[in-house]
Length: 121
Image 1 (cartoon, rainbow, N blue to C red):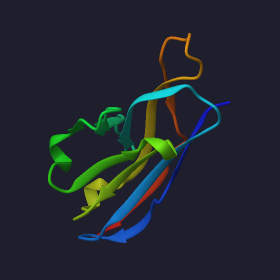
Image 2 (tube, rainbow, N blue to C red):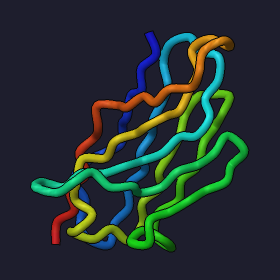
Image 3 (cartoon, rainbow, N blue to C red):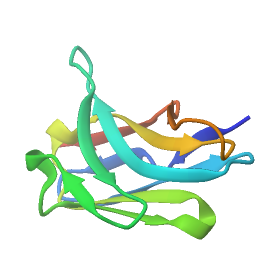
Image 4 (cartoon, one colour):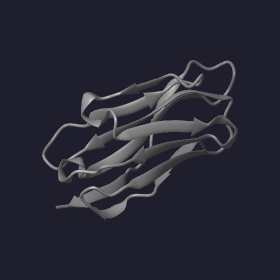
């Protein structure tokens, strides 16, 4: 069974940095895009950043210049480097991947369970 496991969340002061990791476990054929979303209390889940299998990235305006998404295809891992963190970045951060478990399958989306990021002022 394929799963996404996030790590790296925690408590940090405003202006600080965190690096989130997301690893896909289990046997699979391919991973297309990977991405990070976040959900703050009482708010809808929102896109933070995505990265294609070829490395093309896309960012939400509110993280441009502060966050960097990257991936290591050999390790089936995506990263989110978060710098200059603000209290409004506080949320549960979820990893997602568009993948195929077997070559003959259509791609499907998978979500991790999330990792909490808390930024204190």
